[in-house]
Image 1 (tube, rainbow, N blue to C red):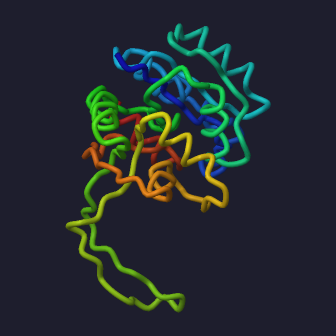
Image 2 (cartoon, helix red, strand yellow):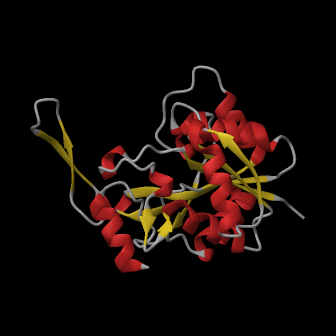
Length: 223
């Protein structure tokens, strides 16, 4: 039997939402945004524990939400880092060596499905690393610095990364501990950086990340 920990970076400021409230606490249909992802992860039989990274000044507030909404399986709320990668690293360190698989999911993605959770864990067990991603549907241009098109890319082989992303624990821990690692924008890029092949699980266009007010409105419609 393998044990899986869900790591949820939820230390976003919400500046691009244009609100004063920290992003995890912005209301989505009357409920704080972060509670949707946490509820979905807690409800999955494939998740054994959850570690959340919150803004340093919001740790107590987030613990209160977890208690108020009766979210089970949360074993720790840790202070986030200066970046998303820093927050995930703090969670990995808190997890210690108790788990075999680490599933990382953004607290600002409220519509994650059980298929995406269980599927990414299954592929991580088999291949070591998995990223949920959706196929690119728009024509994609590679631009030069002077904003002239250099090339039109083949969209049939292009995917947009989402979360959850899942990894064998020793792989993602090694990726985060590597000295001189580049400042990547997602976890799978770090796994690629240590030479790991990353399997793609095709995700859903519903699994949006709430970044702007338009995203928030769209999430309300999709719920």
